[in-house]
Length: 584
Image 1 (tube, rainbow, N blue to C red):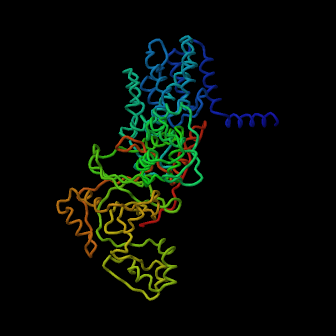
Image 2 (cartoon, one colour; image 1 turned 90 degrees about the vertical axis):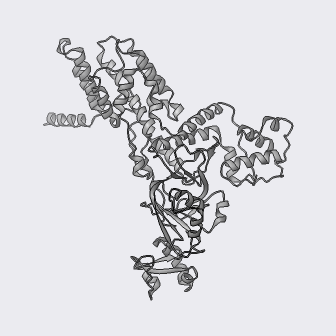
Image 3 (cartoon, rainbow, N blue to C red; image 1 turned 60 degrees about the horizontal axis):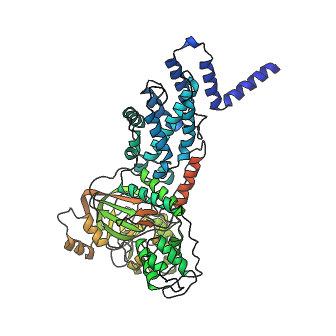
């Protein structure tokens, strides 16, 4: 009985043991067979199939390659399950090109360590000393190189983490994947593997600009770093501070001051015109109020080190890998942390309409990333007040002031009524709380949607709209809304949207925006609307903009990437966005 129990226990341990053991046992089996039992080609084929089935490779830092196993199977099947890289008939150029690609992944914001570049170099050097009948070692080294290349190809084309972990829309997650196996097989046969980055990387001009910027900051990062500026309070034009010489050196490093303005004797402690104008230029570029006052946000810009910027650029490049190809024709894009909108007439439009925007409040009412089609716009719109806003913000005011609704030009209607149908109730508060009636604000000067709203149906029920509160656009930080995006120049945006509609021009748009009634205009051709999130953006002047991470998305993405670097790390849902209030 004791022997039987021991045997059962050993079997249980074996079943629970690492896949490495199964791989090793399989290899031992194949190479314990008599020499004449199988041909060399058959031995190679069986060893490759065994390693692929195990989906674990002990020689790699990230042993689990299950997410690439299907592509690897296809790649080796295209080669009759024989060695791809090693052997007297295999060109050295292909091996050299792969090692070069993996060693230079930093140029695309990736890490050579993830792809075991130096480790693989050592393996290939060992492989060169092995006899042709060292099947086990040759197959192991050959497959290791293939795994690393497939891993790199997928990362460069699709991104290192899944955008759905960040509540990105399905359109991002459903980005069309290239047939990695077919693509690699083609370039292996043609010995053109060096061309892979150009084939796999995003085709956006922005990506190439960020790649160039990344190389520049990597060079800067090798130089001695400037000490941080620490002003006790906001520094204003004409004031004095002992750190003024250091401020000028920072502005010189940023390219906003010339060397003669720093080294030409202008080293006193007065915040003079040259430094003031340099700070204003910096503020203007970053979308801040260009007043020359060095407050918290301007100080943060001045203190960003090249290493800080490198990290943020790499995150921006990762997000661009998630982006599907943009369609031809007009499109509207909003960068949430930049508080900025662009309206392009085409892919090649070098002079897009640009304007400031207000986005959802951080933590409470974040504006979502989305990609939808604008179907129509409404002039002089009603504001259908979301239940959450009604409950939290308006009912308390109504309880303390019976005239609140009338004073705000708010009317109550049946929940399923059309916009022209009114329905007054006796017990207003109870009816609102029960959801039997809804509240809406009539068009007019008090309406928070202003004179026009732009509709692209989406699950978060957010949209672009005008606003009567124009002074808020003068703020540096503009996360102030309930989730919708307020635009600074609604009339210009309406002209852009209706540019192809023959019945509309500047005069008819102005009339509609001043009219007494709500007017809906359906578009003949819908316009793609993209809300995206990136804290680094190269603008039309080819200068980089660095924006505050208002929703903490950079740190969340960095944490996800760090987890993905851990051996055998499992992909997990990383973040769900904050509350998305509807329609405000």
